Image (cartoon, rainbow, N blue to C red; front, side, top):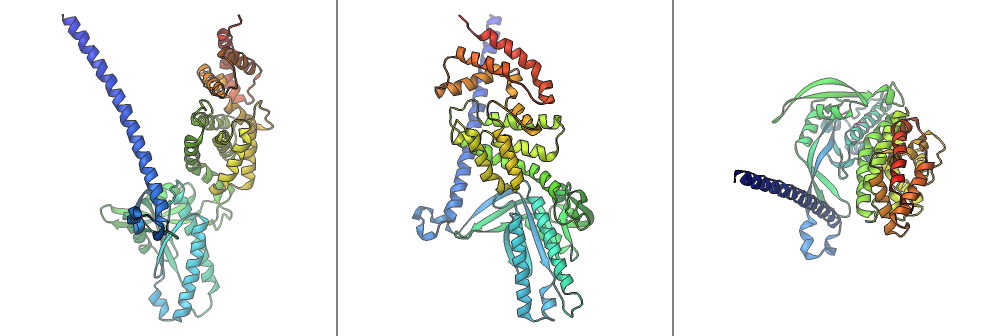
Length: 470
């Protein structure tokens, strides 16, 4: 009797555990659905906010004034120019305002270059922010680069007026990274009004700085220290946070600067490491596009395969000793190499390259890099015929599954994909084709040969055992 009760209890516990698993999966699915609905709502609100009021249906006119958007990581730059009243007492006021307008006009050109959002000008102060309205991981670096360029511009203007009996503008900059709330206003030309402690801290840093300096918070410093030389420059009291360290940005580190002595403009090495950091943003955009637009019958050429190839080109690339720029080109090519399936199945490599040409200029890739990436994409066309080391790495990563222990289940997803398009017969015919393909296939790099070749030979034996020759 006791044994039966114990058995029933264990059975009940097992049922409850299974039910709990099912509920957990259900909750996760509902949470994902809720997040997708929220994203779609925000997307539609952004679109509606830009439509003229007279064209809006009555039911959505409540959006016409403003809406609040939250950004978890934005970088605010606050530039405080020398006291306007002090200079105005000694200079012609009209000429003064013209000079100020010209300075702010040049600042606008700089922030546009670095894809930073101008927020507003307040008298003789200027505010802009990175990571708004498009979220990105590189915004602290973008803002500091813009600040150094502003500093360089102001120094050259000051030199121009040296020796003249004329006061000229001096300025100081405070930068801080953190969460902000942005009120979106306007439709034809949207603008943002920032709120939150991040704005307050940036202004405090500026006011605590000496004229001519660019100072950043310790939070911003942690995100930019790879690229810039900075000096500790004291502490400032911040409400609810105590004393906060600030650091003076001196220049770009010599290894990353066009002119090592001046250190205000990035060289190609800087840009390559920057693009590697930015790759996270690009990957999010492209994977999201693939998730939404790839046909449902792509059981093999799907997002999972793309991620596999991105990871594998990095592993093989470092194994082959290539540099950071090569890793960047390989990972980017891997990200795009099957994107052409959105357009067509056959000859998808060509359309993958076309998509790369469309997206990559927006992410600061130069033309030479884009051309090389397109060549790497085209190298994945079957049968592989690589012409150089990077193409060999690309081909080995794309067919990495041939030498993995999960070869059979992965191979079956490709069979199901082809079967649904009536491109293959039964599974026995498929196994014969796979055996022929894998038998003639070769890995091109030493890294792939060491990692996969032995296991690939085992897959040949497994395939032979699955084939029915009767």
